[in-house]
Each structure stands twice: as structure tokens, then as C-alpha cells.
Length: 248
Image (cartoon, rainbow, N blue to C red; front, top):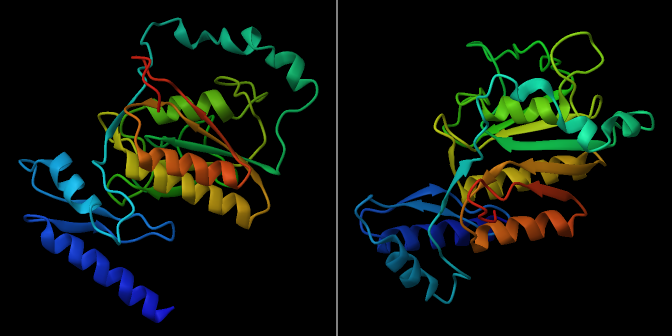
């Protein structure tokens, strides 16, 4: 409603006004989350504690940074020991991917050329790979790190096609959001926004989403709320613990 929009905008303006040199980076989402920026020299935990004391703010916290789980560069690493290890061949006899299941990949994006066209021979079916939001810099979901392309390939590369590798799922649609930058870093707010976007898309298309996040970083309320949103809608999140054994 118009009044509610004015109230939300007013609240964001009030919060931004009490942050030294602060600015609204992302306005309130339907779930009630907004993101603000402050100078790097700021005491962010102290500012978050100050904002959290407001009666009209449920919680405030630093937007923690996640990192992609490292992919080894060993030359034989890509020879796919994993499918046999997890019994994939027997599973493929029963199912190779259903249209009612949406695979969500939250990572550094997918291989694309400068025009925004999918250009990896195993990941170039524009009717299957759905390009969602680039939460890093608002551009395309072009992978500038390589981690995301690797993860998409493991999960859902085109298969049984005489080239490249075999993905675990051969046919289900894949929804890709970019939250990790060229260095493999990404924020918890971007992760949460991507989760909500993929869940909302699945709900709108009468699908069940299985979302993969191969990143690791500190826990916070933003991530917990995103996971609750996903669980409340009957979806599944598969998350790496990170190479340092830190929970997502």
C-alpha cells in the first residue's frame, strides 16, 4: 500500500541519517531487510548495536563476507571420481532430472561471453540455464572467478552428449544468481536476496527448488532468516561448510 511504502522509505531515511556518512545501499525487501553502507573506517558492530536498539528495527548486524570454497587445480581433479562414489550411475537408471525441480546455484555466475551469451559447450542451453540477478555489481551473471561455472557443471552440465563432463542432473532447469565476485567474496545480504529470488521463482512456476551454495563464512541472522524462508516454502538448501569447516 502507498502508506506502507512511505513508512518503509521514511524508516530507511531515518536509519541512514543516524549513520555517520551512511547511505541506503538496498531498500527494504518484502521480508523487511535493508542494506546500508558506511565508510570503511566505521565501527560497524557498534553502529549495528546502536541501530538495533530502535523499537522499529528487529535486528541490525554487519553484512559478513563469504568466500568460495577453493577448487583444487590438480590436473586429474576433473576426472570425476564423485559420481561413482555417490552411486550416480544407478540413480541415472531411474531419473536424470525432472522439469518440476529447479536447481538453484548461488555462486560467482556462469561462463558467458562479452555479449552476455552462454559460451561453455556443456552449459550453453539458454532454455535450461536461467540467468537471475547479479547481486555483485548489477551487471550480468558472467563468471569472473570460475568457481560458479565449475559448480554449475558438477550439478547440471549437459550430459550424455559426447563431450565435456557429466552433471549430476541432466534435464532440470537451473537458476543462477551471482553473489561472489572475481575474488570469490560475497556478502550475506546478497546470499539472502538470491535465496529469496530463487524460492520466489520456484513458487511462481509450481516447482520445488534445490539450491546449492558452495561458500563458507560466518553465521548471522540474515543467513538464518534466508534459510527459514526457504524451509518455510518447502525448498532445500545444500551448503558447503567451507574449507575452514565454518558453517554457512
